[in-house]
Length: 162
Length: 69
Image 1: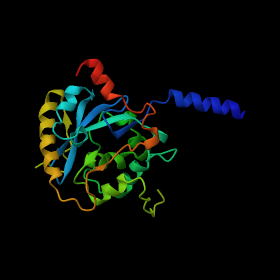
Image 2: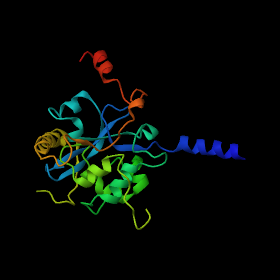
Image 3: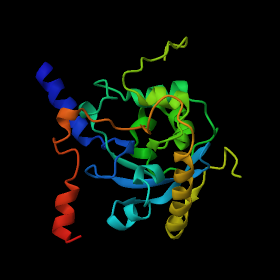
Image 4: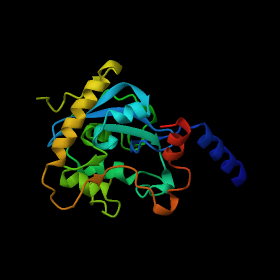
């Protein structure tokens, strides 16, 4: 019985679409660009590409002389246990962003990554409302963002038990 | 100035212009006073150091060598 369940679980996992991290590095296997950071230095705001683009030398060159992750948002298959934010089941970065960051928007951004986004699958609209604030390599990050980005920062106690 | 709810979609032909504006924004962001840390922070995947060579990342230098760049 237990063996059958394990096999069914593995089969379901194989059939489930791969979850993507929406704040990845461009040199990760399977990476695509899906957003560009706009707004201002103090208040960055990501716009989303009509069609996610493969990471090419030409695309990366558009970001010179700064780092591509200061200009673009890249997605790549979630690294799961290879990432310090993954607790074995969920992405704690997404959870901290959803709980601690102020929300600049109140409607879902036009993001093409959403169907395969780990943050969306785990936190739903709470993550999407905050996603436009995220700059992967951020020189001007707000305190809440710095705390969320630090894997050693504990979760705040949530009275709603989330 | 864009309003907070004005999160937009970028068409393919607008990528170059949007990226250029993004570079200007990033250069301005580098001038902001740093509150607590001596450099930028990384918001996203932070790989465990011992797993950096586990196939998570492409070998960019090898790809560049093969393509002759």
